[in-house]
Length: 257
Image 1 (tube, one colour):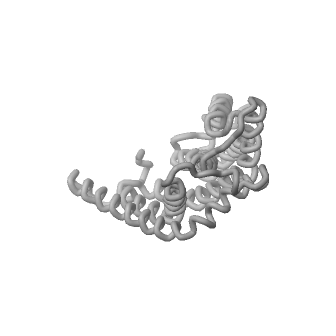
Image 2 (image 1 turned 180 degrees about the vertical axis):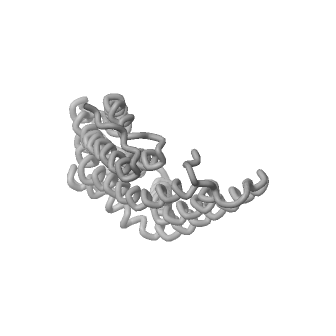
Image 3 (image 1 turned 120 degrees about the vertical axis):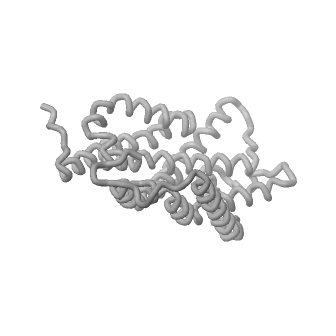
């Protein structure tokens, strides 16, 4: 990380082997936290599956007869996949804490403060992204996919494993995509990016966000816009947040005239 004036990492530099030992301990703690989270989430797999299936209930009739498992291990695969992703969400605060313990000693106080302040904002945006994907995009995407089958005269008989993978990946894509503003604000707080740079690169960022939405969502314009438009709005908000931070610190660039 780039050191800012008056900042310095705490303590003396550790030998390389001590860093490796710290990394090993951090990875073990993360693995244990994930295993415990998975063990907690796994008994609730039926309830979580019901939530994932709810958009399908509003799209077709009798979804229970529609989703099929043609493999002996199909139900086991679905349960483990749901348990793993649920465990990841449950253990996420602990994973962040353990990773923070590993990297924070090498950060300056300014960098630590910026990351701490962005933590709650990051969680909020992840939840908003997942909810937007669940309430807005997933039902539309399912309708679109079934419409394509009808258009081509194909009878859709999706496997339950395929459906769970599709829904989970879509929701995670929305949650991760909504972390973009957090990264930009942190970089702005650290002085790595300025509001002027964000404004000057606006047209390129817009193109990147539209392309990202095309990649992460099903191939129809409406669902792509459901992801892209909020990200474009959040980008503009980030410019304002970074600009406000610059004014408070006295580092604001001259207003363009």
